[in-house]
Image 1: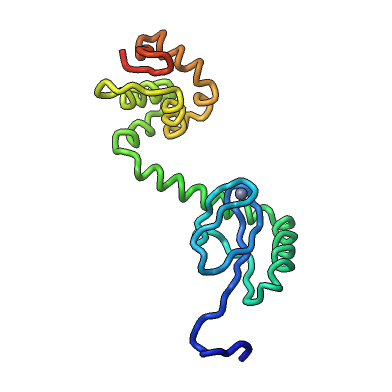
Image 2: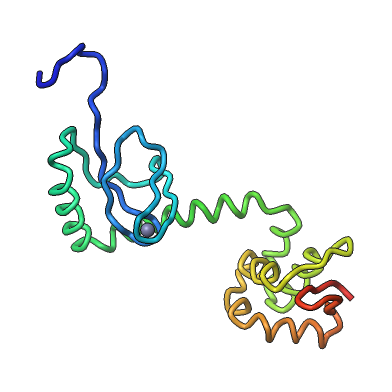
Length: 174
Ligand SMILES: [Zn+2]
């Protein structure tokens, strides 16, 4: 056996993984928990990443990364399927941490009604909220198209006397 040493310590292993956000291929050590993507800065949890290749010899790593990159370029669909899987898992986690009320509102079919009910939750107990929080709510309620026109919908909610602006940039229930 090569590099036998004491024989019972595991050899360093290098894994080739890819950033879930931007897809950059990267070599990491197997005992690393996370890696910060040098391209987009995303902190990836290595345990959740697909391992595209591995080697015990660091000298082999650059060639392996290049091979994985090429293979992945050819097999993008499969690659993006795995990215999509991770994204869905994260979303499911987010959804399960939502409170029960918000999950109930998510099931409202009429989109305007869904927004209005969501805003009632956001502004409950006299809470004020920012435009950013409203966008976050819209995304949680699957109202991505509303989030893209948040100004318009703030206008709508104000015209309908559902919210008002007690302080600049802060909204509350009427
Ligand atoms: Zn990245």
